[in-house]
Amino acid sequence: MAHRGIGFFDSRGHYFKSPEEATISDLAMLLGKIGEGESLAPGIANLLLEKRVDLERIFVEHDELKAEQALARENAAKSGNVTSLADKLGGHKS
Image (tube, rainbow, N blue to C red; front, side, top):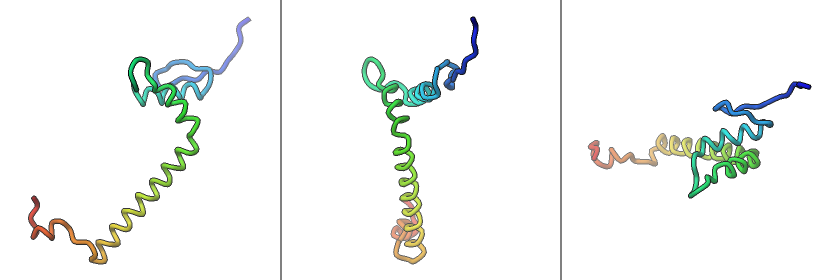
């Protein structure tokens, strides 16, 4: 007897039984072929999905650090504590 089911598809249209499998397929495609012989990308993609919460936290922290760096540079430039390379070269670029 026929029955109804739910399927999940990656960005290439391949069918998978779970959202995790479809996402891992997309991540592996994004990573491309890694290593000699059979690609390590599917295993790495699986690990990325498993560590998603930690990875997202690390990227948020990275973005915060980059924002702090930009602010520090801006403040240093406004305070006159930084001399641009163009000023050191007498307005000439090399």
